[in-house]
Image (cartoon, rainbow, N blue to C red; front, side, top):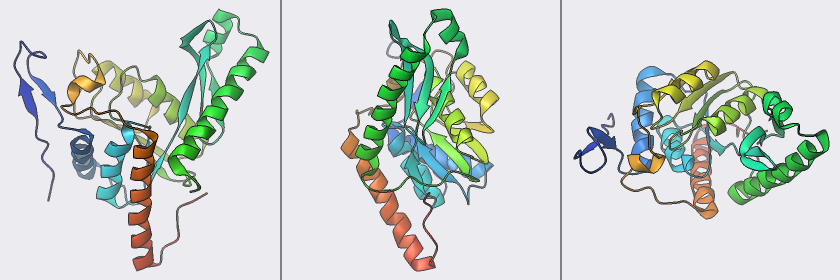
Length: 247
């Protein structure tokens, strides 16, 4: 049975004319799964969520396609005197990439870059332990990877995730997000092989505006979703005799 998203239109004096939204991240994930099934064959795919908000969305996609679910953790490398300005990023798998333009403009010395990198690499590792526990990361090389978040605002984290999984050897990269502006979708399309995004409002405001329920998630919530996904995959593997998808 195909999933029909239950949009709600809010009066103009509330959030704006024609303002549609999801009930919660679960519905957003089901909506994305329905659209992906119409457009793509994801039989050999790996779904990677950007935590924390992307995890329940990605869970629904992984469940719908009966494919593995994992996370890709991305940490921005902030310029020390202006932390919101990214001079690069580090991600799951020990991947690092640098924005040479920002580094040159801000005249950041190599030792400062290394100091910030080490700090954020430690944070990536900490978060991966918090999310996965002792479970191994899933293998990316040679796979179709679906990157999922609960919405994309500036695009910087998702773009970093695309670069990360490319460096890890992904064969094809698909971005699936419930909401993003047309400009951001265009930026993502330049880097990803495919972008699926049901809502593309010209005025994004904030991601939370597009949900009735946008409850903040904890590390424990992320861990619970991943454990549930592994349990479901384990049951399938037991019944089919297939091997686990791990590095």
